Length: 231
Image (cartoon, rainbow, N blue to C red; front, side, top):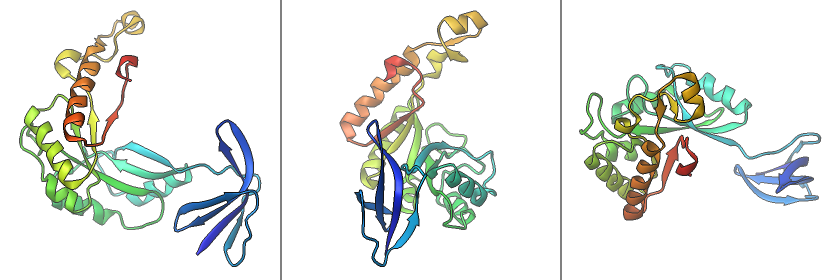
């Protein structure tokens, strides 16, 4: 079944133009100045701007998953069509049972699509891996790690990601170098009298993770790059 949006405005490069857009199975399959409607469902988009759905890669619940349905509906109204949850909620997303618990709270297909990130290690542990293989098999979209975690945790997490053919999601930091810094080191932190975070704490970790990516060929999303040198 086709759906045709008539007279919508799109942005291509730096130019705006009014077009017709044909969608099938949630995928755009044709963009043209005029598309014959036939028996397709037609939506008049005159005066409306059509843009791709936004993806929120850093969605976190405030220690509660009871409001998942409400959140999904509100998000899609704001243009967010996919949300990726961080695992640091209550309970921690570290096992098959907690993943099933979160999935049971996601009771509707309405609103944004909700994807789940699992933690790499078990609660109260920096070295004991979570049930990564089982989590992947039951629907986890990836695993979140901190770059300054135990090296064996990083290595094994990359190996599990290779087997599952899944991406990893990384926060690059070095808490020893950060030394309780509050904001990026520089003129503003000095003026405010706040301890700064050294650029090296991020840049050195990005370089390290680059070595893992090169070795294992696992797509790795690096979140929250604060410093220009880190890009």
